[in-house]
Length: 41
Image 1 (tube, rainbow, N blue to C red):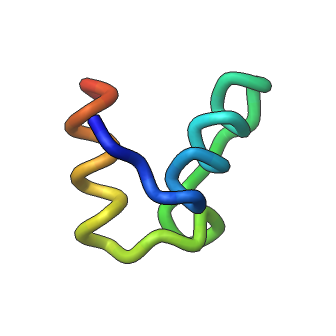
Image 2 (spheres, one colour):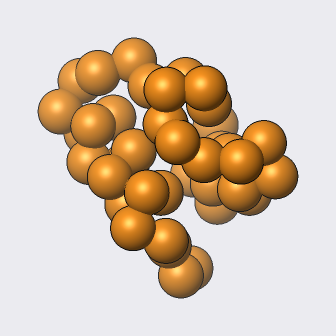
């Protein structure tokens, strides 16, 4: 899976325990859906 810089930042925030949502992630709705699918969430 290839991640954009904002997607990688969102994943890092999730790993740190932060509850990240699509609006505060900086990702488009499409990119957010793809990221959640890749993470199986």
